[in-house]
Image (cartoon, rainbow, N blue to C red; front, side, top):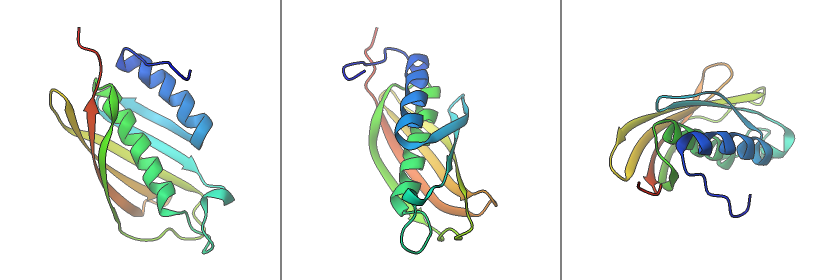
Length: 139
């Protein structure tokens, strides 16, 4: 898969789900119509010395979930930028993170996506704004 480049959004979604699961342990319960829901079961390697998830773990979950929303809206490309506001730290009892992402606006090349990461109790931990660029080959 080193030189593999998906040609369609559907192909990219299928491949991305597998790769993201294998590399990061993120699963997706929903990927459709410009939305996505990603979930991450926490394990000790994701926790800092306070016993809560690293900020980068939350960001990675949000970026990958936003990417799946991007693909499901017909995009095929990569992240251009991502901004985060960390609203609160996770409780040490948290065992799962959930991210919801939605495409807010699409252009010819740029897609604007909002996301938020919550714990399994519904507490919003962080909010994100992403821009993805569509690099798919045009017909």
